[in-house]
Image (cartoon, rainbow, N blue to C red; front, side, top):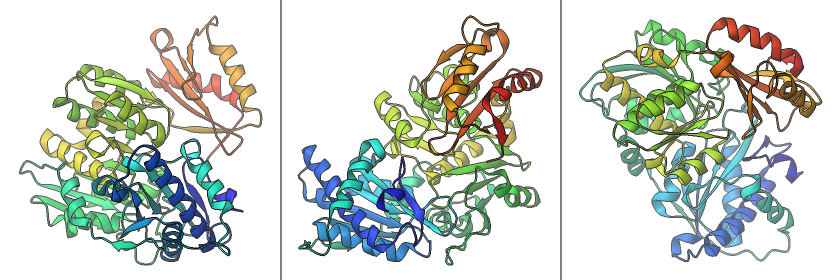
Length: 473
């Protein structure tokens, strides 16, 4: 049963049938052993290396799961710094701010309310995925026998880190005396706690800022709409409110507030790759020659604009594990992903919805332009968006596409396999695409970009039949 909740990047399942308090205790025990052993193996023997940060979201099952998680940690011998209700990026901050061995956030992010789970991070808030520790934690959790265990007596310290966290995030905010009216949809998630703590109730702590609050009540652990800003239907209320309020922009957060999506003043959704290009210019203005990490599914305009701004574009595999690693490896200053994760060198290379919001407000205020005007130059190519196709033989379908469109064919598309397969025929034929396999379902995911709408439709018509049955997913 324990193995069913361990995923590629986190632990997640429905409560209480798949994930329950007994398992939370086991996970706490296994994670404590793993994270403390990792810190010790790296030569960290300071007293704080016994400490693990623990935070939780507002779901109904989070308090009881977190209590048992903490018991598992302390009965293994670890100490806990309990920071209470918070957004996931606050756990990343706390790990680094307090120099702890790691941390665990109780959350199911954008999933429906019956779900819950745990996001685990190592020292320096490096993510723990299947290949970087989750597999080992699963083994250690499964092997412990609570009935015969002689529990250790780790301590629990409850800390209010909001003042320190607020100061950290606010370093990224500078409205330059300008006035901004923005609508924020907290999705009944942790942004409903985080945004008032960082920016003040309705933005009152920031001179010139007015925040129109939507879905900020997270006391019931339920959602008015699914807390996933990547689904366009979940942004409909925000889009309407931005226009009605005559706001400069809107921002929608996911459940644990590590991701966000922006809506411009006209109510149009801003693609996260387009926003990456806009924010990259901001960071490169004071960091000439720095690296910008971007999701390989992003518009080619990101690479072009980063080069034009004097930066080094760093194309990266999809997923926060890879994005954070690339940012650290290349000494990059900023990174962006289509999923709405934005990463910052000066935030320990970690992602943060709060810092993304602060940076967007800063860029908008200083530009003297509207959000739509800022983004328009980046929107110079036509994109399909991510389209899903159902097919059992995923490898076979990819092989067919490569044979039909790759080197030696009429299209003569260059091929690379950094993540899935990318075919690039833009220079001669005006298109490129990326095709990735779902890890858990019989699906292929296509992202196609072209120089104009005509080429886009033609290539969709040519590629789609090779990939299976198109599905809305």
